[in-house]
Image (cartoon, rainbow, N blue to C red):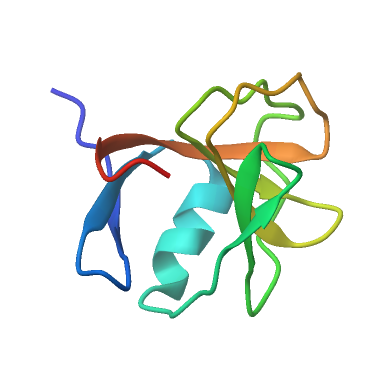
Length: 106
């Protein structure tokens, strides 16, 4: 049985979002940075973004991503996390980190 790392995002209202991480170097690096406090903001009516205190590694991770609703990704160009709440097109500067498994809607 495959064991996947999971992370929990605690929201200000006390609810939580559980994300099952993918097996890639960027997701591993994010996990190793925890715990941390982030502030998310809406971006383009498609995603919620937050800036990380340091970059995640791009090497060894998929070279593109086609995010769906509930995808957690890393945008290499700006160094931010992205929670997608709308479907989005395939994009080469995005690294897939994981998918929402349970919790509040984003």
